[in-house]
Image (tube, rainbow, N blue to C red; front, side, top):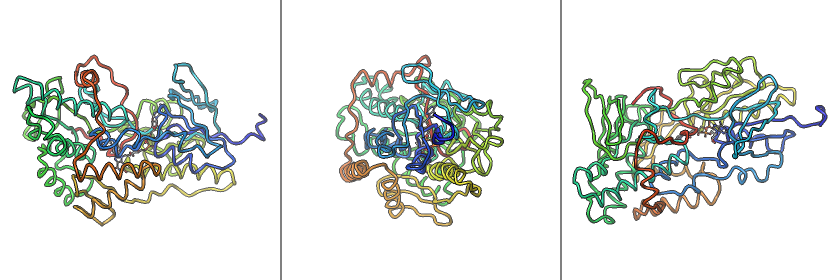
Length: 454
Ligand SMILES: Cc1cc2nc3c(=O)[nH]c(=O)nc-3n(C[C@H](O)[C@H](O)[C@H](O)COP(=O)(O)OP(=O)(O)OC[C@H]3O[C@@H](n4cnc5c(N)ncnc54)[C@H](O)[C@@H]3O)c2cc1C
């Protein structure tokens, strides 16, 4: 096609919050958008822990990108894994599902590939302790958690049963706190009458965190409330405690005094930190972009790579003004990158990206949450109502919203968790931890980029 008549080509890498909002902001515009993702769905990461603990189904938190964008004729969805860039030739290099290479030419590139789980230099922990980033992670955790109760039920050795009824969660940020609380609620409400040999209500949940307090980013008052709520739930909190080793039988932890203690545990789950994916290094090498400590790409105030006005980096992958890895940052920066392209086509300029902070929220237990918004700090029931309203508003599609509300009602009112159809083989594959197993890379997304080990 003649370069003068063909529409401007925009390639967006990643259909998470940032990429999807960029694509939506370019719908029905005179541009040809290609949204490339290695997953066919947009994942609502804040609800991953609910999928992992049997409340929500995978379909309720993962909506096909094609379905979301079905009315946008100028947006093509491509299922492929991006492996590199040819910045000089303005091409994205990707691998199609069956392994062959494809090239996606662009005039403008928006890179929104999110972040991956960080094990703080201990990548060998990944097979022992799955992270919480992708749908695969949530389903693995679901199998491990429900599998642990099943294995405990038929164990004849009391020590083995105790071990399978001990769950370790590493990292007391929002995801760790939510996950730990849900495992205790699962044990004490949903499963307590279903098992007759193992006393599942006595299941221990140990939550380890390197910082002084849980939910540190919510400030001291809400953090103290969260600690009390976790205590009431029966979660055992270990602050200033660094997990130094994980094996098939449990964990070793260096406590505040420096002494190392061993804890036997059948299940270990990792929610402690995030870092940029390897694709960020590839992009940095090609463009000369700088990366921060977590590997994120340092961008100019307009979210572009310095010296490359045609490449924007947005969402969790971008390092700008110490903005946190939050869904709201991703949505706003994605939308901004699209707006910049639109303005540029009109020969106009946009000002620098300005983030509007709408606060953050974390679920503690039934009827309890914490919400922090500017100077406002809410906790307990009002915060919980707000939490529900926010998450329903951001779920994609009416069916998912309605379905999630119904599932929450059933879980809150009657402790029902129906999303746990498992077989012995699936449980064996998930629960047999050995270092030779190679997990799928723990995907993209992530907030709480503290860069600090827990
Ligand atoms: C468990 C959890 C709970 C969270 N809870 C909250 C919360 O309560 N509130 C909040 O504001 N934020 C929360 N966050 C953070 C929020 O989800 C992220 O900030 C947000 O998802 C970042 O959006 P993104 O588009 O940058 O990345 P993502 O949403 O991660 O999307 C990245 C996309 O890129 C794709 N991708 C990655 N690499 C490639 C590749 N090489 N080729 C092709 N595609 C690729 C991925 O498949 C993915 O679809 C949570 C995150 C997690 C993990």
